[in-house]
Length: 350
Image (tube, rainbow, N blue to C red):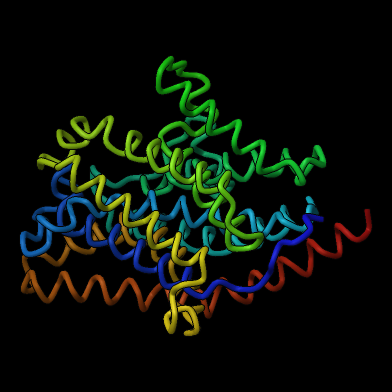
């Protein structure tokens, strides 16, 4: 058990997670879908110039994940950690993956196709580790998340939760070293490119739960510097992919704002926002993120010539939010409850 760690839901993170998901949705619908391989037939110029930076919502997701996953692991109970992750991840993923697959079979084209075998592998959530193409390319971030979960699980397995801050400091030091002396294998294994986001989120959790110290402040400053580097080093390659110019200065400002916002949360300085229960927004974020891209693109292409582009765009956004809410209520909640009961009984027998 990690002594001194505070528990309780951090309401602001639910709101923040939802807003991060929306920025990614707007990025995909207004620009990304058209710019990358013409997956959609047209961009949405009204928002594309603003939300060309919306992909950075994923960086914010990873920071939030660092905070939340350390909260989940704080008890030092490996079984609880693994059970909570399985119950949280799989029910919504199974539902969204299945819906995407069925729509691909129904509305698919040369750009959107999938086989039953591919679908079955995807349902394990391990397709990205064994070279099988994802049903929806948005799943790439899940594979990054799973690596982070595996790292935390190993720490729990070794009984080193008490030393996790020190371990994360070592991780940060390695991240800095890899910037100077890049070794591709270690860069992949240690989530280089996003490691600073996870480390910062975890450190903000320690600040929130155990207090502010000079050492934690130093880690945040170093993680911020690393995050700026990681988010801007390959910006030219991404500019080519989305066929739009990106300013490293704007990226730096956005990434810095993530640190400021979560820093305020860690210091419990969010006022009335933190007292509002945003749980429903947080709950629909995961299915919204999983479902919006491929499904949204296919619907957009099918209806673009029949409906006013503005009506279609906003109807698609609102429709995806409502569909995500329906999936959470009708599928994810009951399935998660049943899955938790079954797994708890199985674990209890061992």
